[in-house]
Image (cartoon, rainbow, N blue to C red; front, side, top):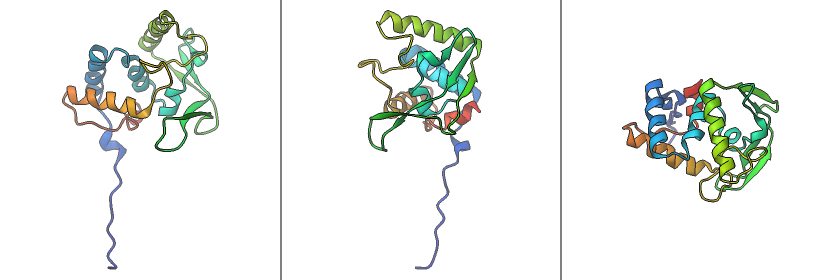
Length: 167
């Protein structure tokens, strides 16, 4: 009765994908999940937090400067809900995230596609759901992420850990 059982915490390092694995998953997404490809390409190419990516608006995308201004987030309101609330960044400070040239080109093309659908590509959210064009959900993104990993023969890993794959 007095014995203590230590349960090891899951190490984020165990869930980090290699560069080759990331390339396989991104290629799979480009071919099989066209709507989601820009989302994951930007995510894996910048290391944004979930709420930062979900709340990224076009007014914070500086394509000419090749950077993103991260000054707010779209956070979950509770654990088991899809409701989101605007909030500040984790540190309470804004920051600038540089974009590689390929991501600038991808976002330019994405912006044109969103404008062609009649979505606000000046102040609206950069990434939205394919059906309702509302904000993204962690659970929906997680399903797409794991589905893609399975297709390329990788044991599915948590999506949030991929911030560390970027780092």
